[in-house]
Length: 265
Image (tube, rainbow, N blue to C red; front, side):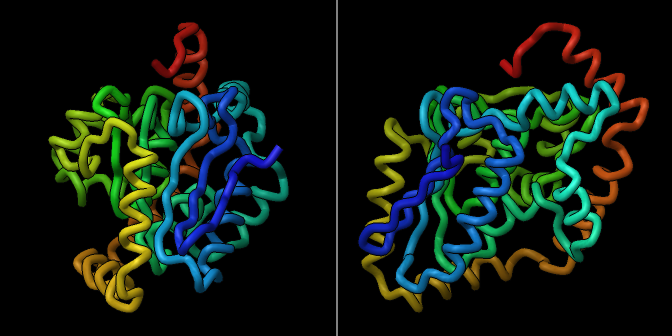
C-alpha cells in the first residue's frame, strides 16, 4: 500500500498521508514516501500549490510505536540502509528531510490538520507555510515523554513561530494544546471546520495567481529566517539525536513510557 497519495490537478498537488489504520504514524515506509513525493514535486513545473493532509481520523500522531519499542530495548530503530544513508549524507537526516523539503519547495504548502498532530506529526505540519486546523485537534511536542528532543526541524521552526519561551514550555512539559490554542499562540495559522477542503480551496486560488509573484512571496518571506542559523540548528538537532537515541537515559524513558500502557493521547 502506498504510504503517501499524491494527485495533481489544475496546479494543485493534493498530498495525503495514507496510513489511516495507524493514525498515519511515521514508519520507515512513510518517511521514504514523504521524501520521494516531496522531491518529485520539486521537479514538477506545473505545480503551483500543495495541500498536505492525513487520511482517516488524524493528520499524524508521530513516530510509530515500533520505533519506541526498539529504542527501549536497545535495538536498531532504523533499517541498516537508512542508518548508513544518514551517516554518509551531508546535511539533514531522514526525518529532517521529510519536513524541510516542504518548506524549501518553491511553491506554498498548506497543511490541513485534524484529529492529532503529535511529535513528529506536529513537526511535519511545521514544515508547511500555512497550517489550518480544526478547533478540537490535538497538537503536542511529545518527544520528551520518550526521552527525546524534537529532531525533525521542530526545535528550530517552532520558536520562530511561537517565541522561544513558549516553545520551551511546550517541549519541556509535553503539554497538548487544542487547535484553538495552537492558533492563538501562532503554531497554527487559523481554525477551519473542514481544513482539507478549505486548504484545497485556498490552494486553487493561489494556483490561479501569477506564479512568479507567488514564488517571490514565499522566497521573500522566508528570507526573514536566518538560513545559516537554521542549518546550524538542524545539524545540532541531528548530532544530539544520534548521540541520544539508545543511550541508557533515553532507553529508560522509553521503557517507562511504554510501561505505563498509555497511548499518545
